[in-house]
Image (cartoon, helix red, strand yellow):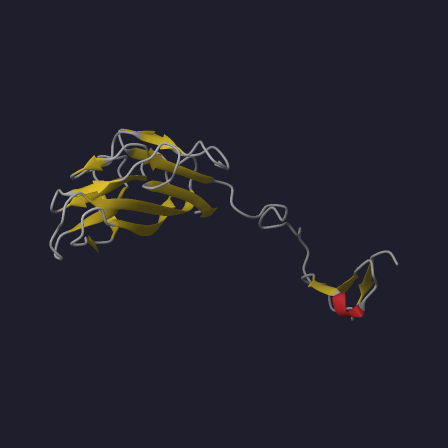
Length: 204
């Protein structure tokens, strides 16, 4: 049975019958009892993410990095994916491709270069600028304690939802604070060990 539209009660309520004609699957819409034009508030064909990008550190380093400003590349191996235009990077500062609400994830993998005391650790930080990169403020961070064992690997992740209202003003960078300077932050040219992820969740 083809789909039909039936007048329901004369009060502006209409029933849309599905192709199968099943009453349990009927959908009801209400038209306002006024003169005017109905319009969609958004594109009903749209949906899902429109931007998804990932970058990584390609080379190990030991010590601080404020920010990580070199040896960065877009994920380009082993099933990598890029949705949309993607991020751009210069001297460790990342620029968003369009305005919107973004989920930013910073994944840091580090290893004890030598035995460390329990109060020593490493802090991965997401910094956000709202003035075009002139200044940055800590938006998310996590202090991770090291281990007393040499060559002990640890992974830490930091998350931040960023409202990018202006792509020329809102930017992000990623810092590593290494308080004992005896942790090696791991990089790799084919595997995301220390990496940054960007996903546009919706419009601002």
